[in-house]
Image (cartoon, rainbow, N blue to C red; front, side, top):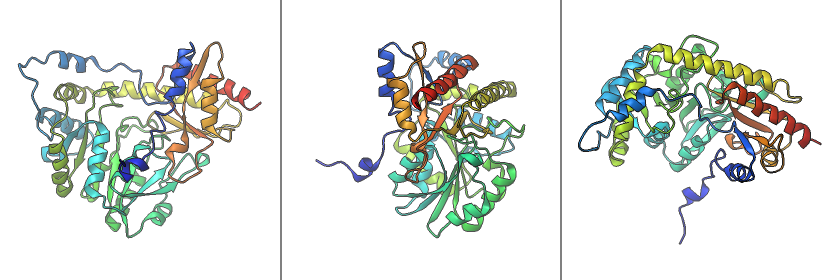
Length: 395
């Protein structure tokens, strides 16, 4: 019996596939500093847990397919803080940001359609686009340029009659690149002019460190019919295990057809939605403190990396990732060596080779992504181990 061509063409997650090496190292007693995945160590707000514990119904029933009214209204209140006015019939609560991306892709892609995505990019974009027969048109960026992609001429060259959308993570995973308001306006103008969608993955919206202004593609009314926002509580509230995300759009055709998928999967978890309401209603002070902590970690990580000979790395402006070029030919080989063969006082570090974040074959082979989600002490030790490991590996 044969499996589908679509599933056989998919690759395993470039983030998850190295856990076999890390687990093997741990079984031998080695301590591993996990700089490989965006799992924050900041405590989930206690309001979430309290709301779930307070649930007192006789039956844990299905919620509405589009999401509980309370959850949708909480997200609407949250969006209004940033001058975005979405109605109840313009938001669908989803099982995490990943399902929101799947819904968006399903609604707009026909086989052969092209999706413009700056590379390196979040690896699931490749998977989700391929499921529906779409083709990614990568806009290549470079470490030496801080992975900047918001160049009008560069983006226009990627547009063709088959262009259906541009998909952007802003601020970005894996590079930490963040767009300015003028750059976002330029992208909106291109989308309106050439009649394509903007899939705006904004799960790191608050984590933009060089400005106090919180930006969203939902703030540009002239492109309201082009914009689909995918969102999640995972990173913003350090609640990755509560799989609550959303898709927001003012395009009625997109919304109504995404509802077919929402109805087909019945609903999102009721208890997690109840907890999410309390998170969206947290005061601004929560975001200010969280942003300040990640900003500090960014600075700590960047300055530590700058002390490594031969590294190429610009200071990221957002999210909690740094992608950098190492003085090695093969970052994957270096990672496996770090986990299998290297240790300093019984410790080593795990990161992600960046080749899997590229659509263009051969690119990113000497690059890695680090997530600065650990406390300062562990972050510095993890980067120190990379520095020590590089010295030994290059011998």
